[in-house]
Length: 263
Image 1 (cartoon, one colour):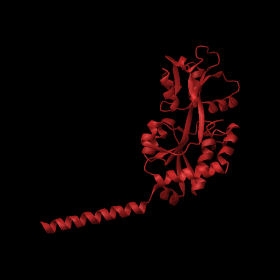
Image 2: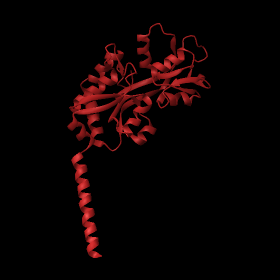
Image 3: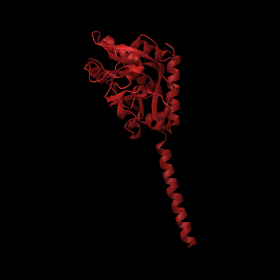
Image 4: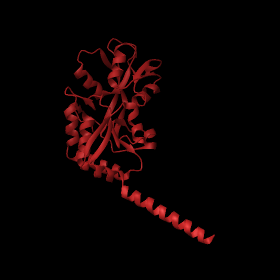
């Protein structure tokens, strides 16, 4: 029996050492990214001016430029994988991509399961209605109304907090369309996204009824237990801030710096 026990212990030790060796060989996520030369990024591609396709069908936008700058700091290329908003964070769980850079709000609920970098965007919520709507002039007026939202977004939570019934959408443009067509009474989104929408659609029939007092704080989101990758992206963001590159990207799309808390 003693001999059998010794053999079993030796076998377990060998297997454990082999497994540990394989883990060490695989390295951290950051090591894998640098070895592959690619950082995979989940983004919508339908959310101007953050992540969208221009007339030449190129993926562009504030978040896209930020992502490319971060990847460059890591010494790799940015590889974008486009998906609907509601599947972006889930894609981290299924390892479809390594980070999401798509105006993801930093909330206590998300921080329980995921890690966030330091913020790179600060925006306020805009309550958007049809231009001829006089029934909604404040967030309190949302009670009993229909608000078109991507259902897992911060803005959907805000709408529900004021008693609105959610009408699920795939993104901001669809939300606006539902409001203009009368299938929803309102939508909430960040103020700078709506100002950009106004530039693209100057004759639209929507308006801002109110702005929230709360500020949405957004960062890069990634799965937990990847301290090296989190630290590397935070270092990259810090260097980009100090070099004025993030401010430059912000001014390019918004004519203001949305990367600071007070604008």
